[in-house]
Image (tube, rainbow, N blue to C red):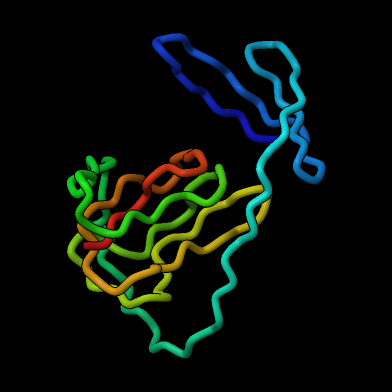
Length: 145
């Protein structure tokens, strides 16, 4: 399925998620198989809202490197990854104004494409990921100030 590389306390780990059945995942860590229990977390239910189509952004203004969490000191609303996955597309840029319910990015998790929606009105103050990045559950992806 999915392969990840982690470094924990300076030690590298290669992790391959082989199977997920219910809340039990079979993973291989550096050649050793493990069965791990995941906390099941319900995806937030968002009612559809009619919105005008977003203007396509210029490709040159897309972030080329992950940005540090400038507002990580507590200011701003932190949008975290609800599940581990891969960033497929980012629809906003730093400085963009967003309303609650606006689509911020699309990521693939558990073989499904999911949208991360803004949970507050504000301005994008930091984007901490790039298209193609693998992210873990709880990673702060976008900060809305």
